[in-house]
Length: 225
Image 1 (cartoon, rainbow, N blue to C red):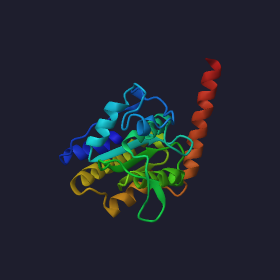
Image 2 (image 1 turned 135 degrees about the horizontal axis):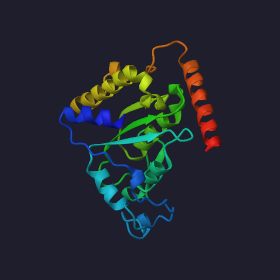
Image 3 (image 1 turned 45 degrees about the horizontal axis):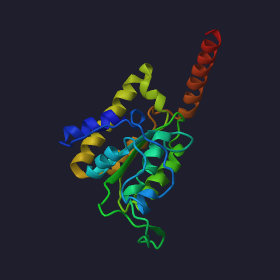
């Protein structure tokens, strides 16, 4: 999904970089507030976060791309988000809606874009991420640049569904190009991205049948192994 989206963005002239957080050393946030109270802007831990924060701050848009883990982002993504704390300010203010939050850092945050897939077929499984991206942009005083969610994510690697997958990847590429050119997704593209990958009324039943057959096959293979 990310590869196709970024390819489209590059087609439109955007400079892109795909960073895999799982390959970085990112420690858990200690919640000690040293980055606010002792050494403002600097975490006491030594890992890859200083360079990642520089890349974060230099971007116009940051795409948070994650598989869905227990209705939320992956653990490595959550650690990354938590460790952005040094970019903020310990003081408090009210946001435009009157809700209290921490003051944003001195440098304006990039716009946020969320891309995710999950094993379940329905788009309703992304409710937490849809709310999370809005809370994140509120906390960073920025805005939601866009969102792309794909249920039944494993189908994107299913050779039997290749025509449908190729069409969807083409749509992702179009979305990336469109976003790089205009700074947003059109209503039509956003609508099409939410449609089921396979145009069938029994979409969920097809998923259940295929997924259960696969799980039974894997259970049997592991027992023999």
